[in-house]
Image 1 (cartoon, rainbow, N blue to C red):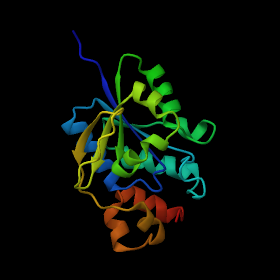
Image 2 (image 1 turned 90 degrees about the horizontal axis):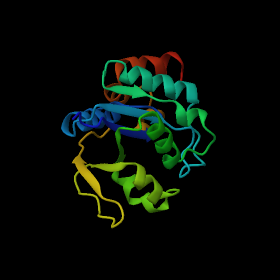
Image 3 (image 1 turned 90 degrees about the vertical axis):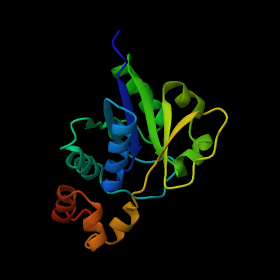
Image 4 (image 1 turned 60 degrees about the horizontal axis):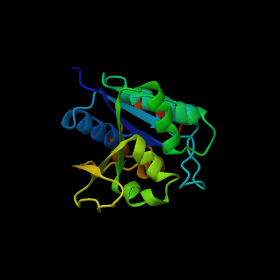
Amino acid sequence: MKAKQKICLIGGTFDPIHLGHTYIAEKCHRELHMDKVIFLPCKQSPHKLNKQNAPDHHRLKMCQLATASLPWAEVDDYDLTAPAPSYSWRTAEIIKQRYPDATLYWLMGTDQWEAILKWDRPLHLASLVNFIVISRGKKPKHIKEFPFTHIDGIHTASATAIRHQPHSPLTQAWLNPTVLKYTLTHKVY
């Protein structure tokens, strides 16, 4: 009997996508034996409605560039083309329709995990996916209704710092070289 395909979903604004994002995706792929990792740039986070993101087409292209050399990764633009705001449960439903026989996982950081009860329809999302929570040291707190797998992450890249200092040495160290070139050529930040 063939094992079910394991697909990990990573949602976010990816403004910009940095090496921390691809590092945790690779760690998840390798350590949890994911067949595929799908990056889902969202149009607008419902929790950050006052934040102005870089234009959608730039964030999508940066995700495509950052994952181009990762055969197990793909980028899906569903959240960018769906009506705003981006709800994770809606995205998970669509991906489940596309891959009905797969087991879906949702990868998130501890900050999102600790806010999961404030998400739109979190129990419905939990019925569609298995949660993976990545942290930088301390283990995420247990939430009764939401079992999860925990993995440690060590990458310290910051999208906020990159946006505020696009020409700094740290930005150069935190971005895939093709993404860095794209941000500078197109003056994204």
